[in-house]
Each structure stands twice: as C-alpha cells, then as structure tokens.
Image (cartoon, rainbow, N blue to C red; front, side):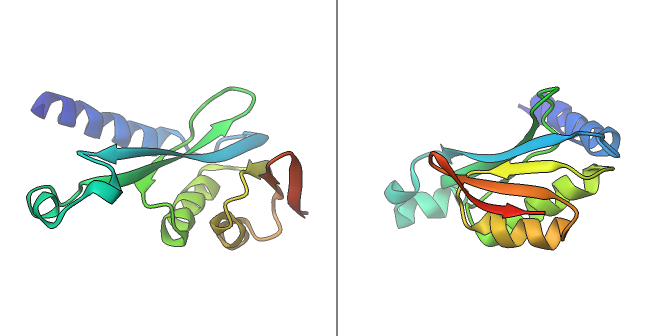
Amino acid sequence: MRLLREVGEVCADYQDRVLRNLKSRRIQLDELWGFLYCKGKNVTPEIAAKYPCAGDVWLWSPIDADSKLILTWTLGERDGRTAKHFVDDVAQRLSNRIQLTTDGHRVYLDAVENAFGCDVDYAADSGARWSRFRN
C-alpha cells in the first residue's frame, strides 16, 4: 500500500505540473459518485469514529471532448465549495477561451462565473434541453 500511495503522489505531482496552458476547445465537467467503507446513509457513530472518511465521495472531472484528456480531478462533496475549488483548478489549466458544458447541477453556475467570468461559452444541460447559456 505504501508503494501505491507513493506512486499516486508522484503521478498527481506530475499531472499538476505538466497539465498547464492547455489549448482545449470543448470541455465537459461531471461528477461520479462513490463511497468509502459504506454509503453515507449507513455511517453510524461507531463507523465514523473508526473510519472518519467513511461515506459518500464525489469524483469531479473535466474531460476534453476532442482528445479525451482528463485535465485534473477533485475528490470531495457534491457542494458549492468543492465545485468552486474544482472549476477554479480547471480554469487555471487552460490558455484560451473554451466551450464548457455541465449537467444541470446548480453549483456549477456560480463556480463557472467566478472562475471564467465572461471568458467562456457555457451551457448547462438539464435533461434533454439546454437550460442556460453564457457568452
């Protein structure tokens, strides 16, 4: 396990240093749910005492629609604070204006506006229709 942790740290450091000034054109942001030890609804006080990180966790990832490159990633809750951290990180890795799409999760609205301002073409997909555009 120590070796896996060390390899993971080296890979994360490499990705953080190298994936900068990217010239992506189209980026899709999304989250993937998982859990550590047990689902959040099943975390008892005993489990929480023994495994403080037990429960729900979300993997936030941006994918370049053309190259399929994952620019970065963030683990956290599915909330505004994590969204802001994640979208700020994505914005700092890009060197040009992009077309950005997300699902209809509302926390993206403020996070995208704070990170990109007006320097993004943004749409949030809510089911089968686009619910918001930014130019």
